[in-house]
Amino acid sequence: MPAIDDLKNRTTPVFSAADVTVLFVLGGPGAGKGTQCERLVAAYGFTHLSAGDLLRAEQNRAGSQYGELIKDYIKNGLIVPMEVTIALLENAMRDAMTSSTSSSTTTNNTTGAGVLKGKFLIDGFPRKFDQAVKFEEAVCPAQFVLFYDCPEEEMERRLLERGKTSGRSDDNAESIRKRFRTFVETSMPVVDYYEKQDRVARVRADVSPDDVYAATQAELTKRLGRGF
Image 1 (spheres, rainbow, N blue to C red):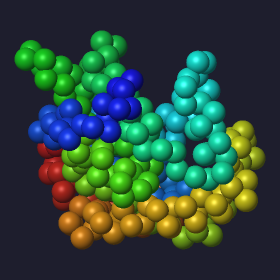
Image 2 (cartoon, helix red, strand yellow; image 1 turned 45 degrees about the vertical axis):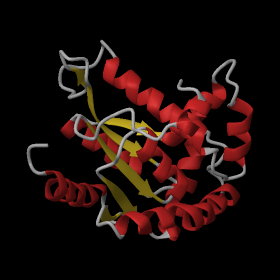
Image 3 (cartoon, rainbow, N blue to C red; image 1 turned 120 degrees about the vertical axis):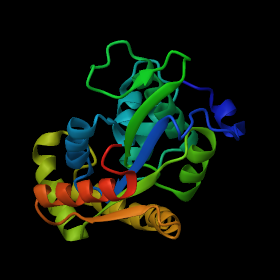
């Protein structure tokens, strides 16, 4: 994993947007981001990276220096310090692009000149404005944000249902409402920032998964072209 101090001081992206396609995938907890990302991976060869999943894996990794910190932040519905999250994402991107076990159907590869190439859906990130700025400054500029827009009542219903079987400590009513407040206060300014640059594809997410996916495909074609 890249050193935190190196990440803090870095001002040039380690990956080029000409070689690495990054889409940020945002939406409130329970908006259906993961479901849509699974379908996009199958159809377009993206690598799906969930910031939340990476953080949960790190908190459970034996010997992690950040495990307890991550656990406390997640339990309280707070946002983990950005350097930790960005370092985990960068590491996962590099691993995906250099893995020798990548399927032949994926577009992630290394060219003869050693240039890393890949297509990534980064799910649940950036959750704060400073995360967005630092990631694009230090890791890779994003093409745009896929924003799944869903009413809180519907998201809460989905999460409480998921909580019956997920085993996740934050799938309970109190933690869910904390997460909603955190999303509105910190992540919506990110959406607004990118929307002013015409870099947000806003997709209605309170309809059927098939309808959400069709709208998502239309946005990708509009912004990246049919052959991307």
